[in-house]
Length: 450
Ligand code: ASP
Ligand code: MG
Picture 1: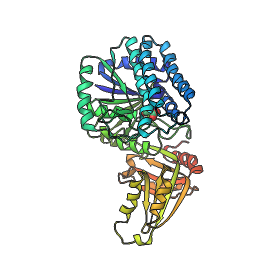
Picture 2 (picture 1 turned 120 degrees about the vertical axis):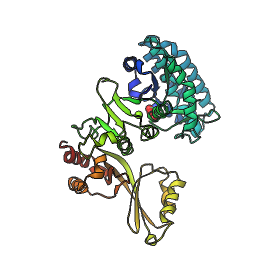
Picture 3 (picture 1 turned 90 degrees about the vertical axis):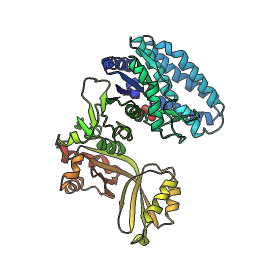
Picture 4 (picture 1 turned 30 degrees about the vertical axis):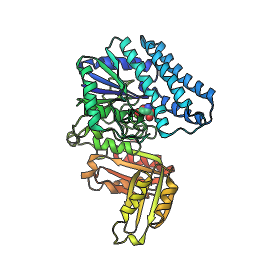
């Protein structure tokens, strides 16, 4: 059994869904479970309806939902059998209009936003299940919501692994064993009382991994619009190459620090069982893509100690200076309690005897964080920064790498430097404007091209 997940661009229109059908057919012997994202940009378009509801613009709401239904109808027109899905899509769209219509003139609550954002997956999966059936496959639409039990942190709900494992085995496995092809939704779930939730933007990868672990799949395929993980962002480094292989740790670090190909949590459910993830390009299905698997196999490959360079802009550095930190205990805990209280995620941290610098991406609660941190010491904030991460399992065992790295990065000013405990990344902060140049120079240093 395999789990194959198709992202938004791989289901964007009739042509893409036609390619998807070919890919699924080529895998029927491996008994695939299909997980799909919403059609490209549909999630954004759905979320853009929230301000329309707030403004009580009845007409714009109807037009917005109508346009999304049309988009599915247009794709269905060119796919044999797919039009059979349209009544269900239209009925669900009408239900959505009524649900959000009840909140006209109000700001949608987080639970309403999740119910709204998750509709794209419901519609795409209906359309694709019908298209696969029309292409002669024994496809069956499965609603993931009763399987994917989550807590009620709307917008980034946390799945309950034991329950979803039991339910996936109970609901999906018999279908697969009967030779059928289940088609289900990424990204969405529901609480114990059935309220819809989402796992966070880009969460369909994570759904695929959760199901892969639950069903003990032999691999999880992530079908996207690039050839896999790369040595750098090709828009910045035109000569960037596709990685044939990466470890779970490398994939997670790269995803956390800016590589957009995979959701950062994807590897997490698969580590214990050692189930590989393969990232593949749905427009070039015969290309090998990137295989992400336990690192033991990679140590033997012995290529460059650095596997990839990623970067992320829009970073804010928060610095806290507190002389009383010297020799005191409990200071870091007090500091992290502030971040925990305001639910702000810290990416990179570096500390000296009397000061700590941390990077954050989300600025919505920054004022609250700074106010509370000011009780612990002097606080100042640097905006407009970027985090650059050099990632590779070989970094752990290669002396002299830091010297090469900092020589390559000159003359850019490097601010916060950190090496994670896993020692597979070296991360530092530069001014945003220097980011692309720094990435190019590092690529030149470690891969010989830029
Ligand atoms: N459709 C969702 C999003 O745009 C989930 C995903 O594509 O993975 O975030
Ligand atoms: Mg994605």
